[in-house]
Each structure stands twice: as structure tokens, then as C-alpha cells.
Length: 135
Image (cartoon, rainbow, N blue to C red):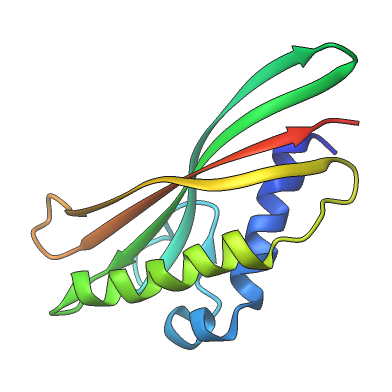
């Protein structure tokens, strides 16, 4: 399994395993925005970038990835911020070692809160960065 796929699996597993997070979003953690009819709030695993870094006898890769939070209720930014709090805790604290590759570090690069063009949806984007030693 590629380092990028293993990292995405670990992120999903950490999110779906955090009880405080699933108390808010249930099992609505997706790879893409769901079809109409799914009820917010929900989470999607977003865009990513991988930068290989060949150093001495190690094969490292720097991964940037986003987790998106969506809320449609009145006070949606408040709900989005509560969800982001649990997303941060899950990703930073609950991801253990990967099975095939070594997770060297994982950090938050930034968090953005925005209103989507529909004027209803509150949207948070959490950008993480991870350094992985590939085996």
C-alpha cells in the first residue's frame, strides 16, 4: 500500500473511532461530498499533496492533506469549530504507527472557516502535514 493511501486510511480510522466526534457527525465521514439528501454535519477527506524527499539512504515523503467539515444549521460556525476541535484531537493524538511505513510527524498547517456560496453552509478546512519514511 502506498504511504499516501495508508495515511488516508489511518486518518479515516482515527476520525471514525473518536466517540466525541461521531457523537456529532455519526458515521458521516466521506471521501467526497455526498449526494443530496445526506444531512449535515459531515466530514470529507479532501485534497492532498505528496512531495518525495530522497535523503541519504532514506525515502521520505512530505504529505499535505485536508479534512473538510460541513454544517448547515443556524450557528454553523460554532458547530464546525466543535467538530474541528475533535478532528484535530483525532488526527494528532489517535493515529498510531502505520503498518507498512513510519509516520515521523504530523502537524496542523492551518484551519480556515468560510461560508459557502449557497449562503447557508458553514465550511471548515483543516490542513495537516505529515512526514513519512517509506519502506
